[in-house]
Length: 84
Image 1 (cartoon, rainbow, N blue to C red):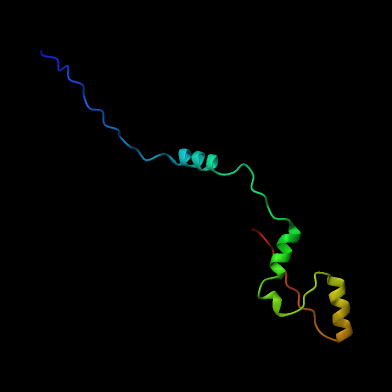
Image 2 (image 1 turned 90 degrees about the horizontal axis):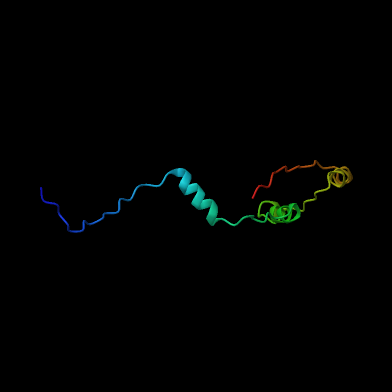
């Protein structure tokens, strides 16, 4: 039997990486810590929204009740969560 001494070509086989490998690579590419904005900064951003800019707002509930009593008006309360 004759043995072929010629070098064989190597062919790279590309496989789809597993999700675990992709998550590991993605985690390595992200910064270690992402600075979160302060609650005060988030509140200022929320109060600057076009919806809330149409009327004067206060974040002091007792002051809003006193003003409503003085003006004989109702209190409109807007509750929101800010998650950015």
